[in-house]
Image (cartoon, rainbow, N blue to C red; front, side):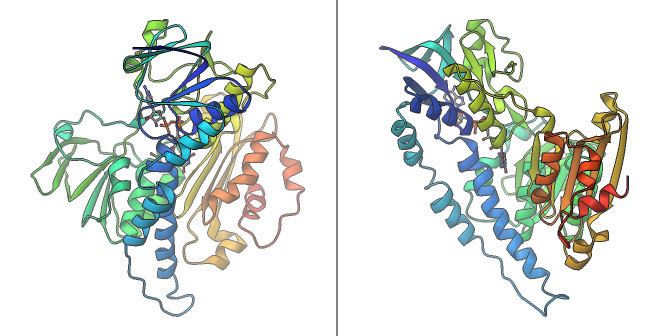
Length: 452
Ligand SMILES: Cc1cc2nc3c(=O)[nH]c(=O)nc-3n(C[C@H](O)[C@H](O)[C@H](O)COP(=O)(O)OP(=O)(O)OC[C@H]3O[C@@H](n4cnc5c(N)ncnc54)[C@H](O)[C@@H]3O)c2cc1C
């Protein structure tokens, strides 16, 4: 049992914690970084990076399927082995974080492998050791897959994002519980590699956080690709007979599959973290922060746990803010009104700001414009695989965009221009006066503005 003294303690070394830790270490502070699993967190080992490698491969197969009718004929034979190898060798080093640990230590950090528990102000226990910080604690403990309390589910060998990404042998069929971004991305990949995929989404649509039109387009594409999509029905019971899963829906429909992926949201573990010992509500899902990512004196929160959105690009920017505040440097507060995110399905679904429904709920006077990608020059040229649309949400009082959605080929890239417009509150006439290159997908934004 030993007591160690430092300037700052980081609990959780995912993208957000690793970034704060690295910045503070490079600035000359003594920083202890505590990680129970792998430095890098969900994103490189079980999230963004391996899933995008899978998607890259799945999209190559889909493009091969589009040769027919456009350029002759092509036969593609899916093989998971190169994808699994790439994930193992290039993304995760076979789930080994030596490089990431060395990176943190190289920046001056002290690394501790273990589970941190806050035991009092500025104090964290890891096993028998106690760490005391002069400046405070940064919580960056992220999220893990939430497993809903559906009768029977807990007793089955279900998959989360961890198992599906580590898995090297594809099942014959897969039930995806949850039609949000994670489920939609991984389910479509599996389908394109020949797995029979069945979605179960309790709300009325896939991608329930996006504009409703996005979920509708995706469901249409999924069904056309042979994916079974059940929406508007929650699962009421799950069982496993040793070989396969059976999910019973609220209306009695029965869905069976060899494997079942739980992708119904994410959970945090504030109770286990011991925040109650410093007077913080541990019944909450997230830690509530101010503009400096500070929860209270001596406590900051960054990344998924801060509850402002669960994205790597947000977590690392929150890390910049927290690091600057700890170091006493000036930093621009984050503009969450222009938070953007992409679901990397095919078509990609990019969204920034608020949806039409959210804008109306906020009491804004709203006008929207909508244009199908297939009705733009580039979309028409593109033909096969051109499903999608651009939707703009305009605050008519200020004549600016407060939200936009871009679904289609490269929808996430088209989102770049829309994100800038929302972020910088560019007046609609200024966007309209731009000369858009012909025939780009982003020129579709001009076409959509013309619908206003
Ligand atoms: C399949 C999938 C795909 C995704 N794709 C994208 C994408 O394309 N783009 C994007 O922006 N985001 C994506 N995300 C989300 C992204 O991965 C997360 O937003 C990001 O990893 C959050 O970073 P974080 O640092 O907050 O936490 P995490 O990455 O969750 O890391 C937190 C770390 O803290 C550790 N920890 C927790 N409690 C303790 C404790 N008490 N003591 C010590 N260590 C602890 C954990 O072991 C973990 O390593 C995806 C997520 C998934 C699951």
